[in-house]
Length: 292
Image (cartoon, rainbow, N blue to C red; front, side, top):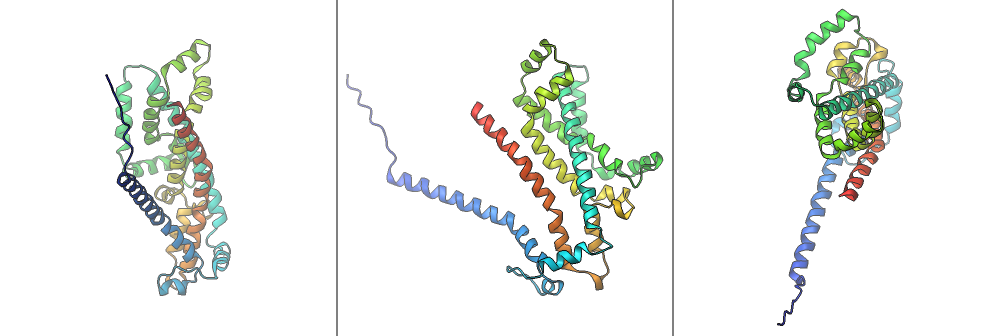
């Protein structure tokens, strides 16, 4: 019995179609990349132009006044830009670390332990996610006045520990990468819960922690609503408050070049944080693909 199996080789038309689809995908991705980068390009261009040049209209070519706008911004006594950067970095760093660590520990407790109100706790986290911050702002403000914490950084840092979005994300991530057997084996070896969480669980969650650190840092950095209600002192203002203060200046003294320069300076820490933490996300994805 002859069974001659002929392997089907791709025809030239099939290869041409595959190559055309690949070129189309590259073209779409490059186009989307350019669209995402275009606002940053315009931001840098406008930060190098004078106020009079910006008012004339759109331009794709940079001007020669980049350092002049930077000098005008950093020499403005009404806009303590360096102090604002320090305040924003301090608040955002502590708030993001507190949010990720405490929320990861809360997610670990909900995921790993079995208790009567486990489903209710998870549902409560989902419910809190749907409540806007503005609804509880008035009650929170009255509470801070009663505690004497107005014009301090504590109301902007400590409440970040209760981050329902981070808790929900961490629970979902633990369900996919954290087997119960690892924690149970650590318990059998005599490890306590805090040691297990810090030395075993957190390294496994490193990609998710890096991702949530980026989101938490950006959210705290861009937060304008709550700091505007809490902060009153000039030396404690954050970057979003300074940007709003600069944009709300007198029309005769308004300088678009200075505004664009301030926004350009404000996004630099965000880029640094992303470049520093993105490698952990890439390492986690690469490790997951190798395991798979």
